[in-house]
Image 1: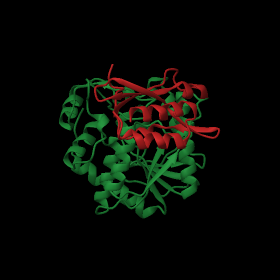
Image 2: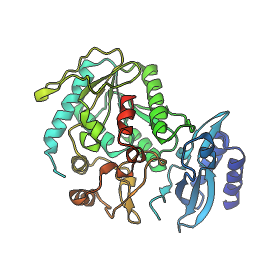
Image 3: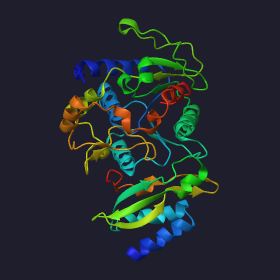
Length: 95
Length: 262
Protein backbone atom coordinates (compact mmCIF):
# COMPACT_ATOMS: atom_id res chain seq x y z
CA UNK A 1 0.00 0.00 0.00
CA UNK A 2 2.85 2.38 0.93
CA UNK A 3 4.53 1.60 -2.37
CA UNK A 4 1.30 2.27 -4.25
CA UNK A 5 0.78 5.75 -2.77
CA UNK A 6 4.48 6.50 -3.26
CA UNK A 7 4.05 5.79 -6.95
CA UNK A 8 1.07 8.12 -7.11
CA UNK A 9 3.02 10.84 -5.30
CA UNK A 10 5.79 10.44 -7.88
CA UNK A 11 3.18 10.83 -10.62
CA UNK A 12 1.87 13.98 -8.95
CA UNK A 13 5.30 15.57 -9.04
CA UNK A 14 5.47 14.75 -12.78
CA UNK A 15 1.89 15.69 -13.67
CA UNK A 16 -0.26 17.26 -10.96
CA UNK A 17 -3.49 17.02 -12.92
CA UNK A 18 -6.98 16.12 -11.69
CA UNK A 19 -6.57 12.47 -12.69
CA UNK A 20 -3.50 11.95 -10.55
CA UNK A 21 -4.99 13.90 -7.66
CA UNK A 22 -8.12 11.71 -7.84
CA UNK A 23 -5.92 8.62 -7.72
CA UNK A 24 -4.12 10.04 -4.69
CA UNK A 25 -7.39 10.87 -2.97
CA UNK A 26 -8.70 7.33 -3.42
CA UNK A 27 -5.64 5.82 -1.74
CA UNK A 28 -5.26 8.44 1.01
CA UNK A 29 -7.86 6.93 3.36
CA UNK A 30 -6.20 3.53 3.42
CA UNK A 31 -2.68 4.94 3.78
CA UNK A 32 -0.78 5.70 7.00
CA UNK A 33 -1.00 9.47 6.33
CA UNK A 34 -2.85 11.38 9.07
CA UNK A 35 -1.38 14.90 9.24
CA UNK A 36 -0.36 17.61 6.81
CA UNK A 37 1.70 20.77 6.89
CA UNK A 38 1.46 23.33 4.08
CA UNK A 39 4.73 25.04 3.21
CA UNK A 40 4.71 28.22 1.13
CA UNK A 41 8.46 28.50 1.26
CA UNK A 42 8.62 31.52 -1.03
CA UNK A 43 5.27 33.09 -0.10
CA UNK A 44 2.69 33.42 -2.86
CA UNK A 45 3.68 36.40 -4.93
CA UNK A 46 4.13 34.99 -8.41
CA UNK A 47 3.16 31.92 -10.42
CA UNK A 48 6.37 30.10 -9.74
CA UNK A 49 5.91 30.38 -5.96
CA UNK A 50 2.90 28.10 -6.19
CA UNK A 51 4.99 25.49 -7.96
CA UNK A 52 7.68 25.75 -5.30
CA UNK A 53 5.13 25.24 -2.52
CA UNK A 54 4.38 21.80 -1.17
CA UNK A 55 2.51 19.88 1.50
CA UNK A 56 4.35 17.63 3.92
CA UNK A 57 2.44 14.49 4.87
CA UNK A 58 2.93 12.78 8.23
CA UNK A 59 1.82 9.46 9.74
CA UNK A 60 0.05 8.98 13.07
CA UNK A 61 3.37 9.25 14.92
CA UNK A 62 3.97 12.59 13.19
CA UNK A 63 6.83 11.16 11.18
CA UNK A 64 7.29 12.73 7.74
CA UNK A 65 6.07 10.25 5.13
CA UNK A 66 5.95 12.18 1.88
CA UNK A 67 5.54 15.52 0.13
CA UNK A 68 2.99 16.50 -2.51
CA UNK A 69 2.46 19.66 -4.58
CA UNK A 70 0.01 22.34 -3.40
CA UNK A 71 -1.62 22.87 -6.80
CA UNK A 72 -3.76 20.96 -9.25
CA UNK A 73 -3.19 21.84 -12.88
CA UNK A 74 -5.82 21.98 -15.61
CA UNK A 75 -4.00 22.81 -18.81
CA UNK A 76 -2.42 26.21 -18.30
CA UNK A 77 -4.69 27.03 -15.37
CA UNK A 78 -4.07 25.86 -11.88
CA UNK A 79 -5.58 26.17 -8.46
CA UNK A 80 -4.96 24.91 -4.94
CA UNK A 81 -5.39 21.20 -4.37
CA UNK A 82 -5.91 21.09 -0.61
CA UNK A 83 -9.44 19.73 -0.93
CA UNK A 84 -7.80 16.45 -1.92
CA UNK A 85 -6.36 16.29 1.61
CA UNK A 86 -9.78 16.36 3.26
CA UNK A 87 -9.77 14.17 6.34
CA UNK A 88 -6.18 14.94 7.39
CA UNK A 89 -5.32 17.03 10.44
CA UNK A 90 -3.29 20.19 10.59
CA UNK A 91 0.37 20.16 11.63
CA UNK A 92 1.00 23.85 10.95
CA UNK A 93 0.26 24.45 14.61
CA UNK A 94 3.39 22.55 15.59
CA UNK A 95 6.71 24.38 15.82
CA UNK B 1 -14.21 41.92 26.19
CA UNK B 2 -17.83 42.61 27.17
CA UNK B 3 -20.45 39.91 26.66
CA UNK B 4 -23.81 41.08 25.37
CA UNK B 5 -27.26 39.52 25.67
CA UNK B 6 -27.20 36.97 22.87
CA UNK B 7 -30.98 36.63 22.93
CA UNK B 8 -31.34 40.28 21.92
CA UNK B 9 -28.52 40.00 19.40
CA UNK B 10 -30.06 36.93 17.77
CA UNK B 11 -33.48 38.56 17.61
CA UNK B 12 -32.07 41.62 15.84
CA UNK B 13 -29.97 39.54 13.43
CA UNK B 14 -32.92 37.27 12.62
CA UNK B 15 -35.01 40.37 11.91
CA UNK B 16 -32.35 41.70 9.51
CA UNK B 17 -32.13 38.33 7.72
CA UNK B 18 -35.92 38.02 7.41
CA UNK B 19 -36.15 41.61 6.17
CA UNK B 20 -33.49 40.85 3.56
CA UNK B 21 -35.34 37.78 2.33
CA UNK B 22 -38.58 39.76 2.18
CA UNK B 23 -37.24 42.88 0.45
CA UNK B 24 -34.78 41.47 -2.05
CA UNK B 25 -35.54 39.18 -4.96
CA UNK B 26 -32.46 37.06 -5.04
CA UNK B 27 -30.43 36.65 -1.85
CA UNK B 28 -27.31 34.66 -1.06
CA UNK B 29 -24.99 34.46 1.94
CA UNK B 30 -21.24 34.04 2.10
CA UNK B 31 -20.04 31.10 4.17
CA UNK B 32 -16.36 30.55 4.88
CA UNK B 33 -16.66 27.64 7.30
CA UNK B 34 -15.53 29.97 10.08
CA UNK B 35 -17.30 30.64 13.38
CA UNK B 36 -19.04 33.88 12.38
CA UNK B 37 -20.67 32.79 9.12
CA UNK B 38 -21.60 29.42 10.64
CA UNK B 39 -23.30 31.19 13.57
CA UNK B 40 -25.08 33.46 11.06
CA UNK B 41 -26.38 30.43 9.19
CA UNK B 42 -27.64 28.99 12.47
CA UNK B 43 -29.52 32.25 13.08
CA UNK B 44 -31.00 32.02 9.56
CA UNK B 45 -32.06 28.42 10.19
CA UNK B 46 -33.82 29.45 13.38
CA UNK B 47 -35.36 32.49 11.69
CA UNK B 48 -36.87 30.29 8.99
CA UNK B 49 -37.87 27.26 11.07
CA UNK B 50 -34.94 25.05 10.24
CA UNK B 51 -34.38 25.64 6.53
CA UNK B 52 -32.03 28.31 5.20
CA UNK B 53 -34.07 29.83 2.37
CA UNK B 54 -31.18 31.10 0.24
CA UNK B 55 -27.95 29.65 -1.22
CA UNK B 56 -24.71 29.90 0.69
CA UNK B 57 -21.54 30.70 -1.27
CA UNK B 58 -18.10 29.42 -0.38
CA UNK B 59 -15.33 31.21 -2.25
CA UNK B 60 -12.73 28.54 -2.73
CA UNK B 61 -9.19 29.29 -3.87
CA UNK B 62 -8.17 25.69 -3.33
CA UNK B 63 -5.81 26.50 -0.47
CA UNK B 64 -8.28 26.56 2.38
CA UNK B 65 -7.54 24.14 5.19
CA UNK B 66 -8.56 20.52 4.51
CA UNK B 67 -10.46 20.66 7.84
CA UNK B 68 -12.47 23.57 6.46
CA UNK B 69 -13.44 21.58 3.33
CA UNK B 70 -14.54 18.67 5.49
CA UNK B 71 -16.45 20.94 7.86
CA UNK B 72 -18.12 22.70 4.90
CA UNK B 73 -19.17 19.51 3.13
CA UNK B 74 -20.34 17.71 6.28
CA UNK B 75 -22.39 20.66 7.53
CA UNK B 76 -23.87 21.48 4.11
CA UNK B 77 -25.17 17.92 4.04
CA UNK B 78 -26.35 17.88 7.65
CA UNK B 79 -28.16 21.24 7.39
CA UNK B 80 -29.34 20.63 3.83
CA UNK B 81 -27.74 23.86 2.59
CA UNK B 82 -27.88 24.99 -1.01
CA UNK B 83 -24.09 25.31 -1.31
CA UNK B 84 -22.50 27.16 -4.22
CA UNK B 85 -18.73 26.76 -4.47
CA UNK B 86 -17.23 29.73 -6.30
CA UNK B 87 -13.83 28.62 -7.54
CA UNK B 88 -11.20 31.30 -7.46
CA UNK B 89 -8.18 30.70 -9.64
CA UNK B 90 -4.83 31.63 -8.14
CA UNK B 91 -3.20 34.56 -9.87
CA UNK B 92 0.14 34.20 -8.18
CA UNK B 93 1.80 37.13 -9.91
CA UNK B 94 -0.12 39.07 -7.29
CA UNK B 95 0.94 39.88 -3.76
CA UNK B 96 -0.89 38.77 -0.61
CA UNK B 97 -3.01 41.89 -0.82
CA UNK B 98 -4.13 41.10 -4.36
CA UNK B 99 -4.40 37.39 -3.58
CA UNK B 100 -7.47 38.22 -1.52
CA UNK B 101 -8.43 41.32 -3.48
CA UNK B 102 -8.45 39.94 -6.99
CA UNK B 103 -8.75 36.20 -6.61
CA UNK B 104 -11.57 36.13 -4.09
CA UNK B 105 -13.37 39.27 -5.24
CA UNK B 106 -13.26 38.20 -8.90
CA UNK B 107 -14.73 34.80 -8.01
CA UNK B 108 -17.46 36.55 -6.04
CA UNK B 109 -18.20 38.90 -8.95
CA UNK B 110 -18.54 35.95 -11.31
CA UNK B 111 -20.90 33.99 -9.09
CA UNK B 112 -23.02 37.07 -8.29
CA UNK B 113 -23.35 37.83 -12.00
CA UNK B 114 -24.09 34.22 -12.94
CA UNK B 115 -26.90 33.89 -10.40
CA UNK B 116 -28.11 37.51 -10.48
CA UNK B 117 -28.03 37.98 -6.70
CA UNK B 118 -29.12 41.46 -5.63
CA UNK B 119 -28.35 41.05 -1.93
CA UNK B 120 -25.41 39.34 -0.28
CA UNK B 121 -25.38 38.49 3.42
CA UNK B 122 -21.88 38.79 4.86
CA UNK B 123 -20.92 37.85 8.42
CA UNK B 124 -18.57 40.65 9.33
CA UNK B 125 -18.45 42.21 12.78
CA UNK B 126 -17.59 45.79 13.68
CA UNK B 127 -15.11 44.77 16.37
CA UNK B 128 -12.97 42.73 13.96
CA UNK B 129 -11.26 45.60 12.18
CA UNK B 130 -11.36 49.41 12.14
CA UNK B 131 -12.64 49.60 8.56
CA UNK B 132 -15.46 47.14 9.29
CA UNK B 133 -16.63 49.50 12.03
CA UNK B 134 -17.60 51.91 9.26
CA UNK B 135 -20.10 49.43 7.80
CA UNK B 136 -23.89 49.59 7.91
CA UNK B 137 -26.39 46.76 8.25
CA UNK B 138 -27.52 47.47 4.68
CA UNK B 139 -24.74 48.82 2.52
CA UNK B 140 -24.83 49.47 -1.24
CA UNK B 141 -22.15 48.33 -3.69
CA UNK B 142 -21.87 49.59 -7.26
CA UNK B 143 -21.71 47.39 -10.38
CA UNK B 144 -17.94 47.05 -9.88
CA UNK B 145 -18.56 45.99 -6.25
CA UNK B 146 -16.96 49.21 -5.02
CA UNK B 147 -17.94 50.50 -1.61
CA UNK B 148 -18.05 54.21 -0.89
CA UNK B 149 -18.00 54.21 2.89
CA UNK B 150 -18.35 57.98 2.92
CA UNK B 151 -21.72 57.76 1.18
CA UNK B 152 -23.97 55.28 2.98
CA UNK B 153 -27.50 55.59 4.32
CA UNK B 154 -27.70 56.53 7.99
CA UNK B 155 -28.97 53.86 10.35
CA UNK B 156 -30.11 55.83 13.34
CA UNK B 157 -32.13 54.47 16.26
CA UNK B 158 -32.28 51.00 14.65
CA UNK B 159 -34.08 52.31 11.56
CA UNK B 160 -32.69 50.59 8.49
CA UNK B 161 -33.06 51.37 4.86
CA UNK B 162 -33.16 48.15 2.86
CA UNK B 163 -34.14 49.80 -0.40
CA UNK B 164 -31.46 51.91 -1.97
CA UNK B 165 -30.59 53.38 -5.30
CA UNK B 166 -27.85 51.09 -6.56
CA UNK B 167 -27.37 49.30 -9.85
CA UNK B 168 -25.04 46.88 -8.14
CA UNK B 169 -26.07 44.89 -5.09
CA UNK B 170 -26.61 45.42 -1.40
CA UNK B 171 -24.38 43.91 1.25
CA UNK B 172 -26.25 42.89 4.37
CA UNK B 173 -24.40 42.49 7.66
CA UNK B 174 -26.74 40.88 10.19
CA UNK B 175 -24.14 40.21 12.90
CA UNK B 176 -22.42 43.60 12.72
CA UNK B 177 -22.93 44.36 16.41
CA UNK B 178 -21.81 40.99 17.74
CA UNK B 179 -18.34 40.65 19.16
CA UNK B 180 -16.04 37.64 19.20
CA UNK B 181 -17.10 36.36 22.62
CA UNK B 182 -20.80 36.73 21.72
CA UNK B 183 -20.25 34.41 18.77
CA UNK B 184 -18.66 31.80 21.02
CA UNK B 185 -21.37 32.21 23.64
CA UNK B 186 -24.02 31.67 20.95
CA UNK B 187 -22.10 28.76 19.45
CA UNK B 188 -21.99 27.06 22.84
CA UNK B 189 -25.62 27.77 23.72
CA UNK B 190 -27.04 26.68 20.36
CA UNK B 191 -24.57 23.83 19.90
CA UNK B 192 -23.43 25.24 16.58
CA UNK B 193 -20.85 22.91 14.97
CA UNK B 194 -17.28 24.22 15.19
CA UNK B 195 -14.40 23.93 12.74
CA UNK B 196 -11.82 21.90 14.73
CA UNK B 197 -9.04 24.33 13.81
CA UNK B 198 -10.37 26.72 16.46
CA UNK B 199 -9.37 24.29 19.21
CA UNK B 200 -5.82 24.11 20.53
CA UNK B 201 -3.41 21.34 19.76
CA UNK B 202 0.26 21.49 20.67
CA UNK B 203 -0.27 24.87 22.32
CA UNK B 204 -1.66 26.64 19.26
CA UNK B 205 -5.06 27.31 17.74
CA UNK B 206 -6.52 29.36 14.91
CA UNK B 207 -8.48 32.29 16.25
CA UNK B 208 -9.53 33.72 12.87
CA UNK B 209 -9.64 31.47 9.83
CA UNK B 210 -8.62 32.38 6.30
CA UNK B 211 -6.71 30.28 3.80
CA UNK B 212 -3.54 28.32 4.59
CA UNK B 213 -1.37 31.00 3.02
CA UNK B 214 -2.73 33.98 4.94
CA UNK B 215 -3.50 32.50 8.35
CA UNK B 216 -1.16 31.60 11.19
CA UNK B 217 -2.11 30.09 14.55
CA UNK B 218 -1.89 31.91 17.86
CA UNK B 219 -0.57 30.50 21.13
CA UNK B 220 -3.42 28.99 23.09
CA UNK B 221 -4.33 26.04 25.28
CA UNK B 222 -8.09 26.38 24.76
CA UNK B 223 -9.58 23.02 23.87
CA UNK B 224 -13.24 23.83 24.41
CA UNK B 225 -15.56 26.78 23.78
CA UNK B 226 -15.63 27.58 27.48
CA UNK B 227 -11.83 27.70 27.56
CA UNK B 228 -11.81 29.89 24.44
CA UNK B 229 -14.21 32.31 26.14
CA UNK B 230 -12.11 32.36 29.33
CA UNK B 231 -9.07 33.14 27.19
CA UNK B 232 -10.86 35.96 25.36
CA UNK B 233 -11.83 37.63 28.63
CA UNK B 234 -8.18 38.32 29.42
CA UNK B 235 -6.42 38.42 26.04
CA UNK B 236 -4.76 41.58 24.81
CA UNK B 237 -4.16 40.19 21.31
CA UNK B 238 -6.34 41.31 18.43
CA UNK B 239 -8.61 38.67 16.91
CA UNK B 240 -7.10 38.95 13.44
CA UNK B 241 -3.50 38.99 14.64
CA UNK B 242 -2.94 35.79 12.68
CA UNK B 243 -4.22 37.18 9.39
CA UNK B 244 -1.50 38.32 7.04
CA UNK B 245 -3.35 41.06 5.18
CA UNK B 246 -4.11 42.83 8.44
CA UNK B 247 -0.46 42.88 9.38
CA UNK B 248 0.37 44.90 6.31
CA UNK B 249 -0.08 48.64 6.10
CA UNK B 250 -3.10 50.02 7.90
CA UNK B 251 -4.88 51.06 4.70
CA UNK B 252 -4.75 47.61 3.07
CA UNK B 253 -8.01 46.33 4.55
CA UNK B 254 -9.68 49.64 3.75
CA UNK B 255 -8.54 49.33 0.12
CA UNK B 256 -9.61 45.69 -0.08
CA UNK B 257 -13.08 46.43 1.21
CA UNK B 258 -13.50 49.48 -1.00
CA UNK B 259 -12.81 47.18 -3.97
CA UNK B 260 -15.40 44.64 -2.96
CA UNK B 261 -13.61 42.31 -0.54
CA UNK B 262 -15.59 40.82 2.31
